[in-house]
Amino acid sequence: MTTLTKRRAIARGSLIVLLLLIFWIGSAIGWSFHSSSRENVQEKLAGGSSSSNGLTEPPPGMRAYKVVIDAGHGGHDPGATGASGDYERDYTLSLARKVFERLQDEPMLEPMLTRSDDTFIELEDRAAIANEWGADALISIHGNTYEDSSVEGTETLYMNKNSVQLAESMQHEMVKAMGFRDRGVKKQQLKVLSLTDMPSALIEIGYLTNGEQESRMRSSEGQAAAAEAIVDGLKQYFDIKEQQAGENSRETGKTEKEASPIKIYYNGAASDGKQTALTFDDGPDDVVTPEILDVLKENHIKATFFMLGSQAAAHPEMVKRIVDEGHAIGNHSWSHPRFEELSLDEAREQINDTQVELEEIAGVRPSLFRPPYGALDEENAELVHDMGLWIVNWSVDTMDWSGLSTPDIMDLVRDEIWPGGIILQHSSSGGGSNTVEALKQIITELGEEGYAFVTVPELLHLPDSQNGDL
Image (cartoon, rainbow, N blue to C red):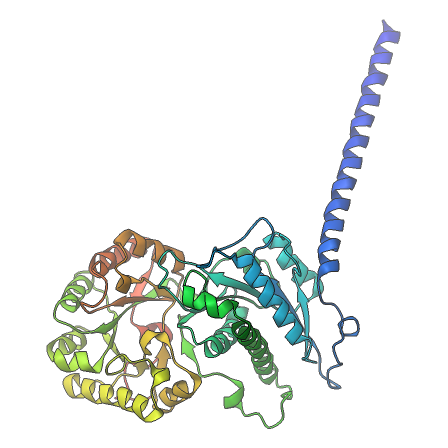
């Protein structure tokens, strides 16, 4: 009996040792496979030190900034399907390669790709590649999608506070280069952005589901323009960082105004707490505007109305009511033209005539300007700035103008809202028919989530008007 027990104990011990050995071998193989997979990915990465990728050395005393260019999607993850039927993964890879090639000509920028072929890479691995390399910035390239094929525009997403400046530089250059609608800079909690140790931004170049935009995005000319915009945005960002750090500019004779784009506000600071600003464009009128004002009054909320001069002249009683009830007002031009199609004199007239009209009606000269379609080129931005106006766009687009249903509008709000968000709706009968109903639900739902509703001047800590001290 004792001998049998010993044999059984030995057998059990041998089995345990065998199982442990199998587990150890399996773990080693798994670790080796994961490590070799990462190494295989990194072997494909077109990047590395300046000595290995043909970059010239930066000027003495200056450092080369390491930049990771991430082509979104890949492999079994095709991303969006464009109007042509082509996949987003192919577009992002093509553009990423062009950006990499262009960056190789910049002595101060050392590039690396997360993927150089149609490979699927986990989001956390994309961030890990940048972290392990000690990158100074990560740019993730994407194309947008929406069920309505008429929707278009460029937007740039960021997650952490240290990435705001990078995102703004990317957005500024991309809108200028592609000529698409400026949909703004938005804060979103995306894995590839949240896991990076360095400033990072995700650029939605345009809407692949919009046939006209997709055609430009996929053309050789469009990709060259987009690649140049990313390079210019990176150079601008690092120039500003160097200036802020008190270092010498890489480009002699460059003024501070030339180095830094004019500020365009898309949102307030999340650090100020759970605040959001309701804004209404294109009014006032005598149909939708009164309903909006009734809802705001009932809920004791102050909002901001970006008015057209022509509409204000047609409905002066609504302008007076808006101001008398404590709401902020902004200038939205006289007749809602595309400013890039105007001469500077015409643009100035659009703005100034609206300022004069609003001041004559309500005694208030706005300090805020929102460009029609959210689009403003650099020259016009300087004009607006020189006229003493702050440029304000939005971070939450309800798309109410397109006739979206209230549930669809609420889905957009839930996806895009973040502390400091600026919500866009419209206060004229030309807007969507569900604006007022959606407004009621926005107030209820965000109020339950703890959001406080403030005016844009309160959110951005800006003057209410030009009538007082600027």
